[in-house]
Image (cartoon, rainbow, N blue to C red; front, side):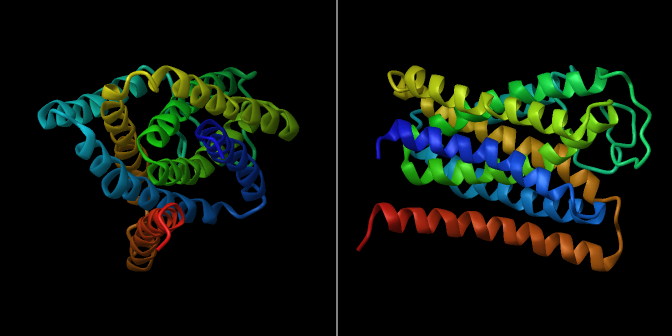
Length: 264
């Protein structure tokens, strides 16, 4: 299997499958959303700290510049989110749209919020595709883990986006189609990333640093605050267990990928 085919397959799995899983998740009760979010937090943090950053440090020539890239990436994601270039709605109250995203009887806004979330999500998916390509260009195992982590956090994001589109007045079929088209941007980003990043190997560690900063920012700024709305001991224990499961899954995926690529 060529590297380009692997990148395209991984980006398709991270984008298209996340939409399909989100559509299935729509049949579940709203109480299951925090479960998916907790697991996604672990997957994101595990990928960032156990796989992406160690590989970036291994290939970087300047450690200080790499650390500054991570810090700058976190600041950039903060500014972009403030400008509402994209917005993740993972919790019961969607701050970006000033509406209750899980309201069973929403008041339609004539498509305004739905259009904004679709445009923002398309940009985000494109960047995710570039990040997947950058990870595969450094190491196959890293690419597999990165694609897995992106797919894991895309599921609750796509679920939130789906509900916002319904809130905005779109039908379920229209909302699913828009989410699917938006996710295809991940494959476009992956293909462009493969052809543009391959000749520039020196920039790959810094692309990985940006990928890690994005995962850390989404987990810490967008996802974890929503978990604090439930302070009961049983919910806290469940959240911690699921976060740990997400981290363990990433570690396991990385180990299996390594064994697959380097059998004894």
